[in-house]
Amino acid sequence: MDQQVKKRQRSCIGCGATLEKGRLLRVVRDGEGRVAFDGSGRVPGRGAYLCSGACLTQARKSRKLERALRCKVTEEDYDRIQRDIEQAESAGKNEE
Image 1 (cartoon, helix red, strand yellow):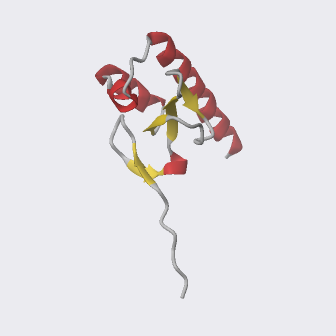
Image 2 (cartoon, rainbow, N blue to C red):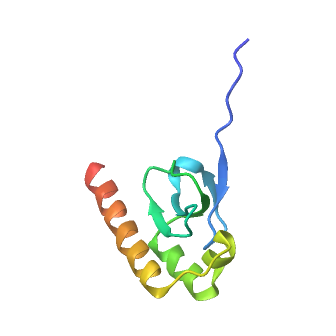
């Protein structure tokens, strides 16, 4: 009898949508407290998941990213993460 493996589900902190882990974008706070976009989804540390750059903007306004990562996220961090997500999204569109 074949057993189906369930895909891991995660929720977007911006809009609340629940999707498979691989379909969401991950932002991580590493052991030294640095916040960055995690394109691989495998960097060790506390992570938060987003659907898109638009959800990052929404999470930025309501400070949901700071609560999810349990740390202060600076404006420079938000700007860098936004650029990295835009690059990842445009690279994904080019592959399709």
